Length: 473
Image (cartoon, rainbow, N blue to C red):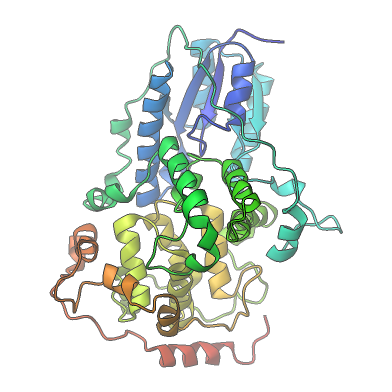
């Protein structure tokens, strides 16, 4: 049965038209759909880079909606209060949204659903930005998965429904409610001069994401199993920013990779595993919310990590001036592009938590401020995996050697040359862009001498192993 009253489509991390369950359901009600984004406390809490990237996504999606004869309504305030206001202003009979799986969003959304329902407004949530919602994947004993490999085996042959099509039309509302001006939100304020440097490296919007997916699954996925570890080449999908803001769905990625696998692309299964690894992070955040802020494994609370995020050693790490080329190149890549190659992330995180004996929360918070593809679950799990305190971590005492890692995965030295200017006669634009992106207060220059290691690899390894000695985790 259709209902001609308007439906509010409450948008969050789902800024696309295709494969949008909440949008499809809202249209099925029969009345006009009012797309609404709310700048609430969860947006206030975002770091500089993700907030800026979200602003770009909102700007682009607003233009996409206008091209369909619709518009994006922007409001700032408490989410429940805003929804009630817009319901009252428009006579909307329902609010639809896609689910989020972090503990704060779950609590907020439950409260909102109960309050709207009590007030006579239909409130409906739909599957969100994962392939398999966390409660739908269980061990044979009925619990949640703590290790990735058995979870992969459990889901790899599951049916993942076909992506939903782009709606043919979006029935416009006759009297649109008032909207904030996106520029008034100053979403990029925290980026300062780094925004201009980072902007050309962003692939914003649904069309750009689809184009990249098509290229990756037809031209590059064949060799993904090997190239994904080579930071100096373009061998990964680079869809993390689009997945983070819902400009493409995990389901769309899954089906494209399955098609490539069917056509004989050997690397496609490895990428499918990476999509499920992303799900695994959300699976863990849903079942064990402590992963976001506390050591996931028991026994790590007494480990002698420093939580001084302003020490000289940590400052050198943040600046990409540790004297360890792999670590420094990776940090500089992040400041210029807003992203960091995954192999590089492992080495960066290992160096901070093990060679520098600094708590993973310091790195987690820094990445949350600097990554345009920031994903709270993947960021938390990745840092705890590297530190040894997380689920499915490699042996906790494994310490990456960024020197041998760089020789193994970047034997031609392409990655370091691309991002480190010091010592090069003719540094590339990418190396120089780092100096244009970072705070002036750092006082760094391409003419500086490349620093000696703040903590040598042998020294740091010995210090970490001594700290592990005699402990049981």
